[in-house]
Length: 203
Image 1: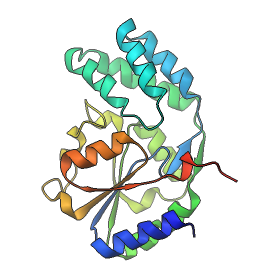
Image 2 (image 1 turned 30 degrees about the horizontal axis):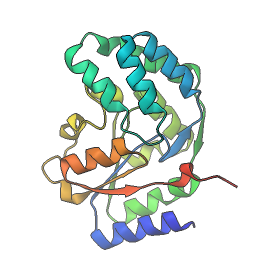
Image 3 (image 1 turned 90 degrees about the vertical axis):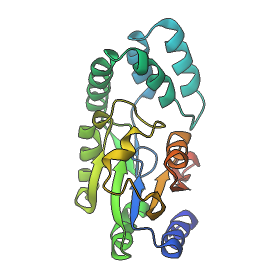
């Protein structure tokens, strides 16, 4: 068991979190898809200045790039359906993933410790369900909150209100890999655990 997993178990035991909220991509599993192609598809549908801003943010690993899309959606609500359609089509066309096996394997243990498991992802529902089903862990999650469930994705906290424990953030731990996840945890007042597995060279 690697040090990151050991630390996560220790943190959950110490604080007795009742709700563990996982990001999907680069947390539970890594979507092995050509993200530059996704960027091309999205930016073709955006004004040049917004497209450049999104491209610049995506070039920074772990950046809260979702805020660029959110800012545009606030004033251009009609873009939402097109955005979701592009994401769904791209993720379906290129679906492939590498599970974080050690993290997947301790999910039953986390449940036995009294925690309920949730996913809050910026990916689409078919992708989340397919990846978790493929890894054999979909049944362990009480709820999946996906990109289609909200107008504004992470780092915006809109999705928080969709969880049954939204009035009690101190019972929750957000587990993610990026500033999108860290910022949303801070916004709602829950603790955050950083997953670094996929940001390190794998032997």
